[in-house]
Length: 420
RNA sequence: GUGGACGUAGCUCAGCUGGUAGAGCACCCGGUUGUGGUCCGGGAUGUCGCGGGUUCGAGCCCCGUCGUUCACCCCA
Image 1 (spheres, chains in turn blue, red):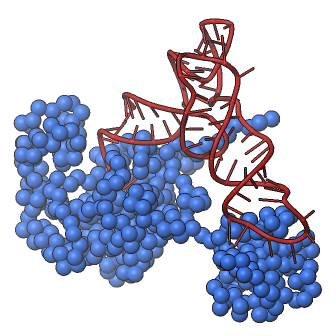
Image 2 (image 1 turned 30 degrees about the horizontal axis):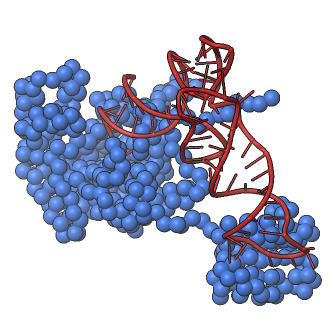
Image 3 (image 1 turned 90 degrees about the horizontal axis):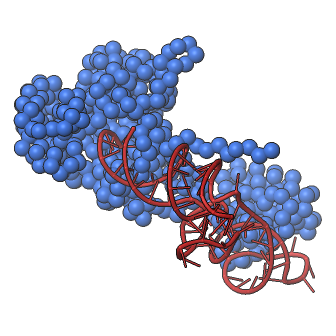
């Protein structure tokens, strides 16, 4: 009987060889600068109490209102697969009491996130993000540092065709003042029902409308940047000045809209040119009210999330993917069954010395095993046959030019250390 | 959730106005004893996404369905 094939759930991203090597490289490169800056790992659950997101991210957002994977567990609790990382970090910080220790708390995370959207180029239902959060410090210098760390991550991949956009959403006072005027302005426009509904939820979203006529209409709209309180304005100016001094180029985009409700003050986005419609490869900002909303003390914070899948696509688009495919150093070919156990123990020893060592298993002819060795990318092949064993040696073959020599088993490690 | 495109060997695809399928790459074997990459020879593989319909006959036409993909929306 033949079973029906089971496919992966719709829209998930997954990576096997050979792409997995590139994926791993991208993910580790993106987060490396944060580790160098003293951020420490926060390993979090992938599902949380649904209320964490509805309250933290905001009921009005698309993410919460229509993109969450929510389910009930056997105890009747409502749980949700995390659609983003910041709320979970905040919850864990509060719950573990980290916020009562030394500030700022600087953590990084890496993992899968879930949104039930229609899949598209660079948009998946399960996708990967790395991110950092710096909590408990209200200083424009750390805003600049967080942005610089993200930028460094992208730069270390060799990416060039991206830009950094920044703006400030100000404090509550700034946004309240702007909102009044913005709503007044929007009321003068002739809008369709869907757009009106969006405006009612969050009027800032209209700035993000891709239709040309909407962009024209919104060109005259009052900008939040012009309503910043003195403190917010001063802050934003400082952040820009730090970025200038760091030599990080950016564009101020007063029309930038972020999809999560908790953002305040400095916000930023990294946009790549070569990705089609889903061009954001990373983004973040300050979220000064979030901790309080989640039942903690009112510490401010700032962080970012970088899309690993999209960064990988960007690296492909720019042709900067290294041939950093995993390849072995050594490939042991045992000739005949009675040589297999020797191959196993020799391989174990060599691996202890740090050599990446594979064995030709199965009962292929030497010729076939050599082919396999060639494909593995190994630089040396060790042939173990009856004649070698009899003389206490192995045959060592250098694959680059086929040079072959006989090496005593005891001297193998030394010979390899010099050769590799 | 809304729209467009597509679904043929493991992969990338070809298949003319309907006559029961092909290429390249990859894979496997061989080119005399235990030696890879090049070359030469040989080989296996498809319920043509699935279900129905039209037809003497469908990979090609029609309907449905599932899936993929691109865009809207939204965002990493």
